[in-house]
Length: 101
Image (cartoon, rainbow, N blue to C red; front, side, top):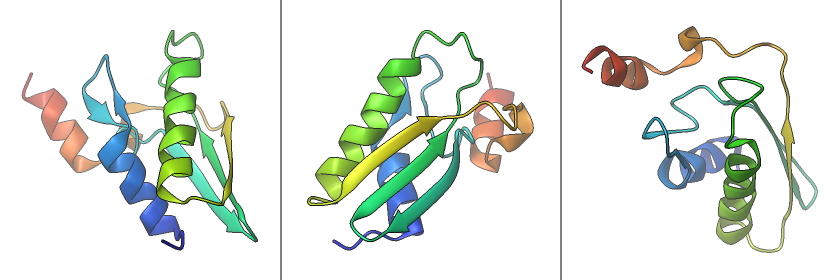
C-alpha cells in the first residue's frame, strides 16, 4: 500500500491505542504532522504531558504500526512539545468518550 497522510492516520487510529485512556492516538490529538517523502514517513507526535510514562512505548507503537503497514518505507517518529497538547485537540468522538465517564 502506498502511504498517504490519510492512510497513515487511519493505520494509527486503528492500531495505536493509549493504554491508560483507551483511545487511539489520532482521536486524542497526539499526531501533529505526517510528512511523506521519497521512501520515508515522518510523524511528529506529542503526549498529553511531557512526563508521560508511556513516552517510549507509544512512539515505538506508532513506528511499528507504520513499518508493518507500509513495508519498505523508512519511518521516523519525533516527539515534540510545541504546541503543548490540550484537551481541545481531541476529536469530537474522544470528547464524547470522556464526557460520558
